[in-house]
Image 1: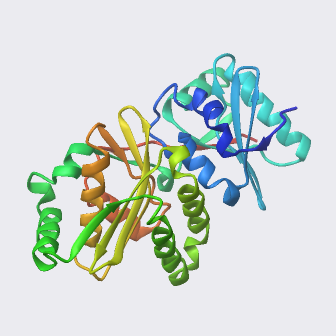
Image 2: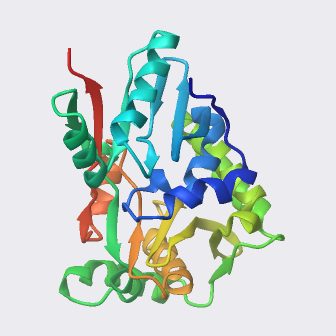
Length: 293
């Protein structure tokens, strides 16, 4: 029987020893994402026979990331099935990248029904393009930036996240939460990220206008070639605010990587349009499986 325990900041080395073996271009395999959302999703993990298991124990049931490790994948998945039988729930495994999907299908043909989850597909971008905004397809984005620079010349500033301004960052996120309770979980994730930003290697940025915050963002270099953006917020009513915080942060933190992962859109139409407007190189396939009956 698998024996799970709560994931904490101190588990970084253990988790990354499995998840950094291969870049699946999915934020679900980034330790920072797992740990900052751990309280919201009640995230737990365990190691067993060369595999890492991650479980989300929500009120409406449990779900799992696919087991990651070397050895017999059918045996590892079988451990999840037996665990679910013991607690009398359906075995649900989600956020499965294409290589692991193929591995499970080959080892356990006909056992599972795989479904692509469109809302869980990460948006992956060329880092250089997001920094430079060069070329015809980024013409509108560049115009937004230029208009901002012209209209607010001498009035705006950008700051890297530090011990002095992290509370300002949090209060800006709190402002968003007050506007929409949909962001309550994200508020907790932001609090954990800010509290532990040095230990987790998180980089953050703050955009100000006349001294007041109009945009914030944070993320982490998850792989040698990939930087993941976990949080990004800006004032919709200030023309160019989103484009400026995006460009300024990328220029300072993503110049040494090839890709920027801006995570999924969660099925939110406004997020989908915003992420598509930056012309992703690709979107990562993400599958969920349930047992065939």
